[in-house]
Image 1 (cartoon, rainbow, N blue to C red):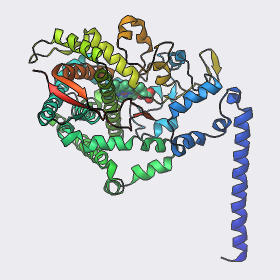
Image 2 (image 1 turned 90 degrees about the vertical axis):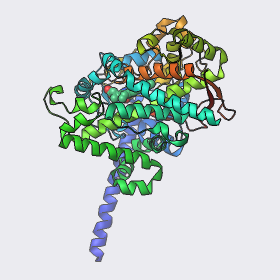
Image 3 (image 1 turned 30 degrees about the vertical axis):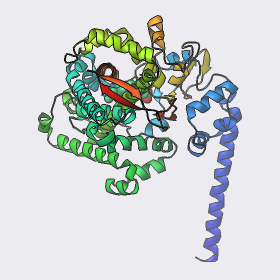
Image 4 (image 1 turned 120 degrees about the vertical axis):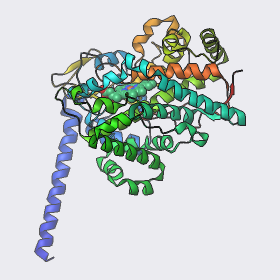
Length: 497
Ligand code: HEM
């Protein structure tokens, strides 16, 4: 390189640097003082750059929903909204607000019912899938759920015979994984049969939860991990090996089915998501989505339908086992309906059990489903949330924990108290674990069926006692879903005579 070209390169570099600094400074001043949102209270750094959130989550390693609690105390209730009414103002059937791109793009499921940003795209996909998740459809697959619950009960009985405690955290994850994979994909993973319920796939999902926190803030990081070939990924990240293997299996399955749709007939039942997704007639434009989109849908189902239900079962069991009176009350109600152990009641019957349903609601409240704020973009003509006018294009949310742990609605919010749902039926309005509005959970009927059959099955068939090394409280780190990274809930189980 001669002297002149070095000079030119240095000049270009300096010019780019100065332009970038000027651009950054202009934006920082504009965002902090001149932007329509500048009048809203909050940390100035948060107004200047969205990397402030990345700093809090990735460098300080803090749970954002817990940081928000502190910020609300200092700055008041907006722009993440802490007042429960905001939940209904944001997530309701009239609003067709987009999901926020950075958050939802981080899951790598952009072309799925969960990942579509716009209401229109999501509605088209959900219209196709709704038929598989309607109350009638769930009634038809009750047998699939009970088979898996029976399999886990058999595994509990085997543990009891050896005197080994059951790791309820892993056991329930294996159950929900087996249900979702068999139901949605017609694939038997048999996670339940893995020794100690340490199925590679559920352990891998656990390991991958915190990784998504980083993905949200850096596309580059996400593409580096997810973009590399599966075989290399398995070597450089052994913890997520099971997940990559399941992804490969689903990809192979989708390829086979799209190449030869007749193979659908070979699946063990007709309720897989592919039966709907590969049916031209199910679409307004009579066109089946691309294989990549089918794969993303499958992955969304797997993540949406496993930890959520398992956390609810785990959290409910944890509290019931620590509160003997409530444990006994549930048992008494179950024995009243289910006297002969060999003759279990069906879902319809379980729907009428008041205490069982109250236990489930309380478990949903405390586990809260998704604990991150479900970010939405206010449409261009603006909106009013909790009486506050909010300009168009603003990103807003109200996390479910701000509703579920609100002491005015749920006195002593940290206490597990199923009775509150029996005493005040109007509390149902404030159960938002499945969210509300057009982007609410697609799997709500399936989840309720798993929870009713699961709580009833395990608490009727077994006497359970927590091990001494089980935690005293359950704390989580926000990773979209709650990430329970402390000691696991474990219990000794004994089959009822
Ligand atoms: C206790 C169990 C469950 C809870 C608490 C729960 C909670 C939620 C929540 C809060 C959302 C909204 C997410 C958002 O707005 O970004 C959601 C969406 C979704 N859930 Fe669930 N879920 C559960 C079980 C399931 C199951 C079993 C499935 C079945 C596969 C499922 C499938 C989905 C799908 C596909 C969406 C995306 C809907 C959309 O964006 O329009 N969920 N769920």
